[in-house]
Length: 233
Image 1 (cartoon, helix red, strand yellow):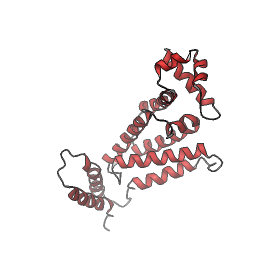
Image 2 (tube, rainbow, N blue to C red):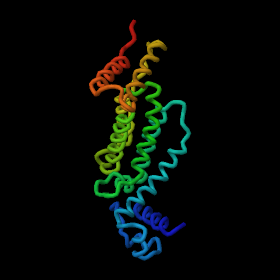
Image 3 (cartoon, rainbow, N blue to C red):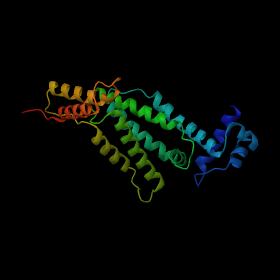
Image 4 (tube, helix red, strand yellow):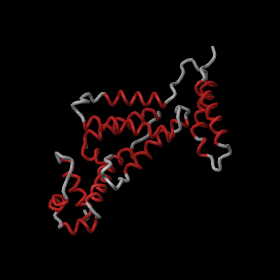
């Protein structure tokens, strides 16, 4: 293990065991067996060190998500992704809170990676015509809700003692972004709805844009109406 990695590992270990959720650079140097000038050869300041440490901790979690085999149903993957996110937060409360702390000046790179992996699952749902909102918007909704409930569980355990809250919020946000399949719909109805929602989710991706803003808005409304239309009968 190189010196930089040893410093990050030491910081991660100290952070996990810290009652306050903070670590000192002096303690990190002692744990890594280096002098402070050595630490500052690799990191600009404590904030830079913590950002790298958070990326290291999150990368271990994201590596599992990257390697996970896709199921036949992207909705199952979406649910599993939410649950693993919450489980990671509960297992690593200090690192999780730091990840989303506004006091950390250097934004950890893992935030973008987590969003990218989530977007991949939502893109699969969009292709199947199962999203009622564009994948980018759905990703922001899911990440904001998942982050919010995870922070509530680890920051205010006395106020939110029931871990099942995460499942309740998960199912609620999924109902908000997903189109529930109709049991009485014909294959043709399902195909039309799938085509409408898929096209609506990708309108913003056309380059160059073939429509004006007003035309795109109107087309989006029409496609949404097609997607939400109940089958006749």
